[in-house]
Every structure is written in structure tokens, then in C-alpha cells.
Image (cartoon, rainbow, N blue to C red; front, side):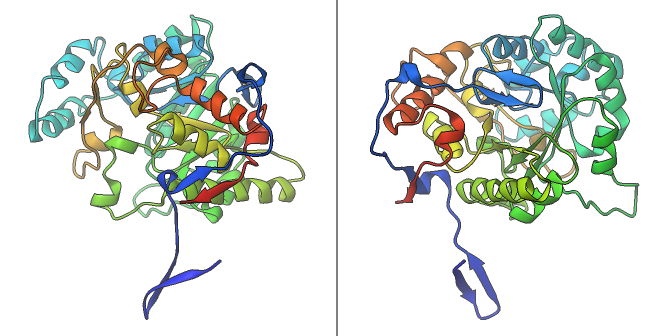
Length: 368
């Protein structure tokens, strides 16, 4: 791999974002009716390769149910407002009225309310009662404390999501979470991340995870690059982790770990390019923040924005364009790729001659 000299003491690889790459048509085209976007992880099959990010601005129990019935997977933030307050709707309405630095300060105050285990149980059971697949997310710091509560409540899939999650966290203040031991003892499949390099992904795959999240999440609302200086462009990150999936498949004798792109998926083109770079599915936030039925009321923020001492996210405002169903399946009323995400993905696959997602991962891409 060619490296670029930054200075005499430092060399670096060139990395590419989704904006830097494009999908190359092949010799064949197909009708979109012949294209399948089915996706399966562990025993759970979905009509579309879309997970909603566990962010209070896009996922409530109601929107998780809506997305589940539309064929995707809504992931609830089990450290969010829905597990801190009996009725967070007035607070969501208040946040939508805030401006400037007052928004971050008020978010910090609101999220200082303790998490309540009984509300976790109530929210998970509410989604489960609708008949859709139930997924909930905790940060690595809270996983040991609340995992049993979540599993006992009936979650189908467990997500451990942080800005960056490693299999080798070192701490002198508290015993770190042993991911391999934890996943082995759990009765449900686990998705864990984020990660952005081949080595980090390979270590996470060796813990027994069913899927790994690629990227640092947050997307449009994320300021980790500005605050911490940490970032990896997503096209490179997804391609590197897809290579780790291939290497682990050989190493493990056939165990397939799913790669889920998490972050920088703002348009339908980004979704198609994420899969073309090797992702099995995508986790999205900002496209759903544009939904008229999103709990954020046109505003979007992640857990990083509410950190008590070092917030690494901003509250972003979007113009609502339509309900979640139209965001996914259209009809689209805009020409910028923010609506009819699945229709556009099918069109990209059909235009390049591919019938399923696994095949589409092999499509040629160029840097332009």
C-alpha cells in the first residue's frame, strides 16, 4: 500500500470518503423488479439493509415499530430519554425550541437524569408486543450494568455502540468489559462498534460478535474530528473492515461477521456506495431525522452531544420532507437523494446488473 510522506517523521495512507468514490456500471443492466435488498443477520431476516441509529432524535418506541414493520431494524438508545423519563415528549418539544449554546447546555442537564431499569424493560416490551424484531443499544460503559435487564426484557439483538469500541480496553479505574466473555455468555446476537481499521475489526470479530459497526456514528451531528482529531474516511474504513471479514472467514473456518456502515450515510448514493465498498447493511441517523414523524421534530443529535464534560456533537436542524415510509420507499419530492433510499439502491443495483446485495459488494468503484 503506497504511503504519502506528511513530513520526515510521519507517513500516512491516502484515505477516501464516500464522496470521493463512484460506482462503475457493468456490461449488464436489469429491471428493478428483479433486484432483492433482503438481508439476514443470525436468525433474523429483513427486507431492507437499513438499521436506524440509536439516537433520540430518530428512534422512539413508536418509530422503531414503524421501521420494523417497513422491513428494517430500529435500534433504541437504552440510555436515552425514553429510559430516563416516563414521558419525554415535553422535553423533546423543548429541545426543538432551543438555539445556540443553550441547546448543548440544556441537553447536558436533561441527560443528567438517571437511567431507570424499569423503563428499559417497559420500552423493550412495548416494541416486542408489536411483533417486530427488537434491538437495543448500550454504550460499553453501561453494558455490564444493564445487559441482564435488557435481555430479560426480551431484546432480540443487542448493540454495543460507542465512538470507538475495542476488544482491548485498558483502565486502571474499573474492570473493563471483557467483550469475548460477555458475548459468549449472552443468549442473543451482538453487534459491536465502532471501528475503522482492519486490525481493530478483526479483534472485534474474534469476540464472537454477529456484526461490527464501521465508523464513529453520529454523522452529520458528530464533531469527534474537530474535538478529538479522530476520524477515518468511510469508503476506506468500510473496505478495510470488509477485508477483515474475509480474513476472519478464512481464519474461523467459515464464520461470517456482518459489516454495518455507521456514519456518513446522508443520501441514497452514500447507502449504495457503502454496500459497494463491502458493507452488508447501513446504520443511518440523519435521513430519518428528516422524517416528519421523527421524535426530534426536525432536529438531530447523538449521545456525544450530551456528554457532561466533553460534548462531541452538535444539534443539527433539518427541514422535514415526509414520513419514514417515504424516506425509505418514496415517492420522493426532492432530487437530492434524501428520499426513496431503497428505490435508489435498487436502481443502482439494477443499473449495474446486480440482483442481490452480496453480488453488489463486488461492483467496481473508481476514485474521481
